[in-house]
Picture 1 (tube, rainbow, N blue to C red):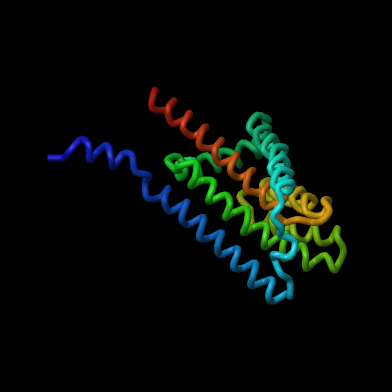
Picture 2 (spheres, rainbow, N blue to C red):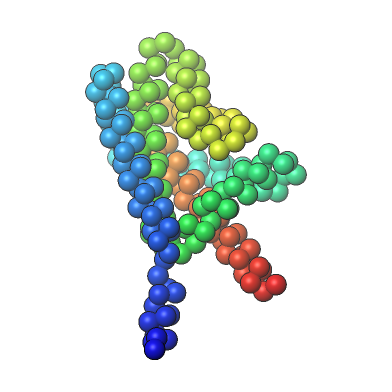
Length: 210
């Protein structure tokens, strides 16, 4: 005979696929960090060259995430099927996998994502391609960045434009500090994930009520 307390404990545990997303996503991002150092070694670029601790860079990076998050919220309101398709994909694929994750788990995942992608794209690829000109470096780097996020063709364009924004955050401040786009990327992903969790829980509650 089952113990109700045991059943409650099982219900409170995150499903395995949620644990796998947090762990798998973190490990994948660590893999990107290692790839950044691997490409950096091959191209004679140190990914950490422009990475310096600074409270001002942390604040700038945090504030710079707000326009990106505002655009994300806007895409949920705009009557465009392309944006609706992207948001529905995120809800369907990510929502159920992070629904039970703690805020700390989501934040740690976002740190790994932001750190890994920015070290690779801004820290290595953009730094290396600067030899061909700043404009070329930004276009080249963020076409690759968009392709990495190829959920849909529209999302490739959106991700590429966001990548351009992150690249500008690196080069428009003196001295250049990779901590700014890393922080922006991390905070943006965190805000988006938390919003997805909120919307997913609302939709789940509405479905249960019906």
